[in-house]
Each structure stands twice: as C-alpha cells, then as structure tokens.
Length: 184
Image 1 (spheres, rainbow, N blue to C red):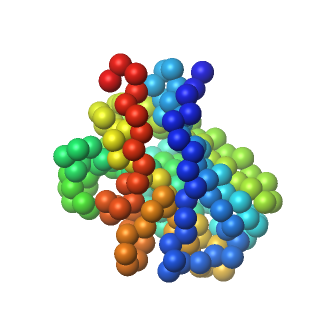
Image 2: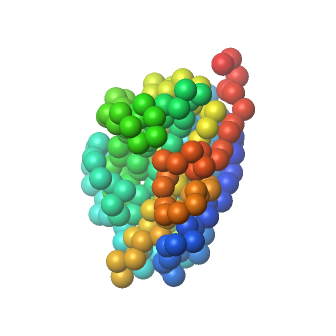
Image 3: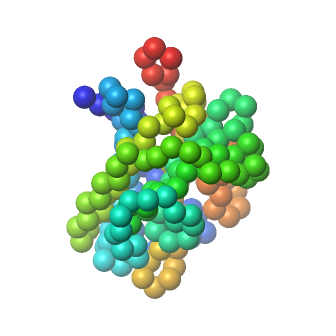
C-alpha cells in the first residue's frame, strides 16, 4: 500500500501559453517498497498537445525539448537530481553539484512509466527508486512539465516560477517539502 505524501497543482509560467492545456495536477506517493510514485494529470484538449510516440522504455537525453514531465530533488548542500519522464516512456536522470553546474548522468533507473490518454485528460505516472539516487530526497522538491502544442507553441508549468523566463533548476521551483519517511 502506498502513502500519499502530497497533492499539488502546477501553474503555468506567465510568459508561455498553449490554449490546449487547462490544468496540471500532481500527486506524490511512497510505497512500502520505497518507490516514489509521481503522477501528473493534465486536462484540456489533449488532441492539440504534441505527445511523443510511445517506444520501449529506455534512458534518453533531451526529452525536455518537447512534451515532458520533470521532478527535481535537492539536498541541504545544494546538490540535486533531475528526472525527465516522457510520454514516449523514455526517461532520463542527472545529478548536479550546484545550480546548473557539474551535470552528470545519474545511474539507476525508473521502474515503470504508466500512461493513460483520453481526449480531455492525460496522465503519466513514474515509479522511481529515489533512495538509490539521493539520500534525504524529501527536503526540497520541484515538480514541473513542458507541453508542446501541435502549433509549435510551448508552455512551462511548475509548482512555482522564479522571476524572468522559465527555469526549473532555479531554487524557487523547489517549492515542495515533505515530512521525512518513517525510519529516516
């Protein structure tokens, strides 16, 4: 059985727009096996969203250049991990030593990416063995999404946005703190 840790809505960046997306919500759960389950639910005219073609799940770079869901986890010392989850079921994981510095591939995997698609709703759920990537992952979390519409426009959604252009790596985007898991 999983325990729900948080439910939050993402907000669109004021400088980006796509009429097709009306909302994006998230839910974070922790399973008894230690998997972090992150669900993103998008509402709107999903037919107008450019969704990558589904392929065999594997690690891939540059997923954020089109419709993609992201999760960031920062430790007290400023190091953080970034995860990208594509509707294609491909994924990526990176470590950073500080703000946009020292990027390297984070080793591990994503257990499962589940997709559900309807004309007015789309959901992606990623099951992540988070403890294998970063200890104390619950301290500062950023959840975000990039949506590319079929007309080529993009919109950027996050828990919070810093001043200026969209920047999911900025400390202001790490807007969710969770209670420590039992036994931590």
